[in-house]
Length: 249
Ligand SMILES: *[C@@H]1O[C@H](CO)[C@@H](O)[C@H](O)[C@H]1NC(C)=O
Ligand SMILES: *[C@@H]1O[C@H](CO)[C@@H](O)[C@H](O)[C@H]1NC(C)=O
Image 1 (cartoon, rainbow, N blue to C red):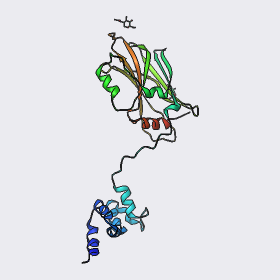
Image 2 (cartoon, rainbow, N blue to C red):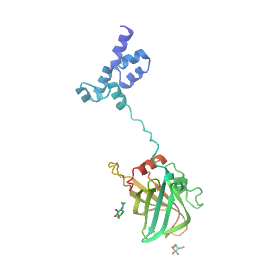
Image 3 (cartoon, helix red, strand yellow):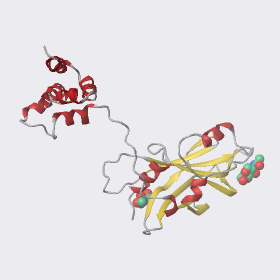
Image 4 (cartoon, rainbow, N blue to C red):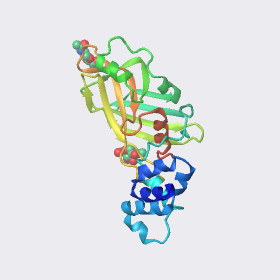
């Protein structure tokens, strides 16, 4: 048997990953290993119906196998089309019917976060604030107090300066989960997406009041407000992509 005949006898016995390695060895191996008949056989093992057609549904069976057999690598996100410089957030908080906090906050301010948290915050909250998940945090200066006996609710809209459109992030949600060990009161709402993205499942926007211990169990002494989308978006770019597909009006 000649050298080429040996290759031709052995290659059909190989699995796809090994045959793909042979393609990379040298030109002679490549010419033999890229024979589309070999790849048709491999495709037929994986997707038998493929061979009911006379031709491959892609340019070659080799391409089909290469594209869909390999483990899909994590796709890198394109740069977001929105930027925080272009955004402003409208945050309103009530106890009952009484407005206790109301501010327009620019995107860059939420980006900057809290440079030096108050000394009395607890460890758990400190770890949370330093944690890796992306969050937007507004320092509240001066601090405000939210009484606990009453319903505390929140609304957040986001506006774009380039086209004057607005989207709803949180629509009157109630801070009904108060974690006294982590010093956070939390509320969430489901994001509403543009009709161009009808199949995006329920993704929540979370908002937390960050408070310090002021030895009074009936009020929260709030020093910061945090917004995150950690269900779905864990980096700045992911957050911008998520905001981009909201139902802007
Ligand atoms: C906000 O909530 C109110 C009352 O539940 C509802 O009527 C309104 O449609 C909501 N708005 C949005 C943008 O979801
Ligand atoms: C706790 O705060 C409430 C509301 O501000 C106030 O009425 C009450 O006197 C405070 N209690 C103490 C022990 O400071």
